[in-house]
Length: 121
Image 1 (cartoon, rainbow, N blue to C red):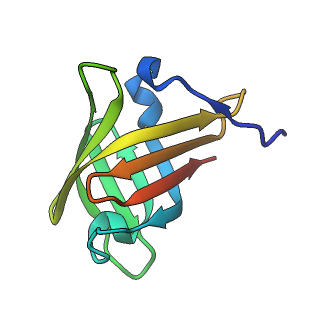
Image 2 (cartoon, rainbow, N blue to C red):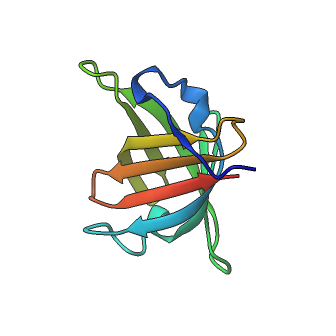
């Protein structure tokens, strides 16, 4: 199996590509609250309209809503997250997938300045 991931054009990316279970590969907090659900998350599960932020055990998961929004000018995708203790928006800065579609990588830049790289395999 090749480790080659191909960049996906974000302007034409179907919204359902964002769904599924994502592992947090890296995170830079910047000005984000280090105790917020997304800052503590080890995994994000994105189901239609529902998000679950799963921290490294023993912490409890938080569930809420999420949606894909696009800006009118460039059709760039943003992910809006609404959790009980956190509401934020993240610009999708990069999406990469393997040629067979089995592996994906998603890069997010949050309004707080937090950056997150998510992997799905």
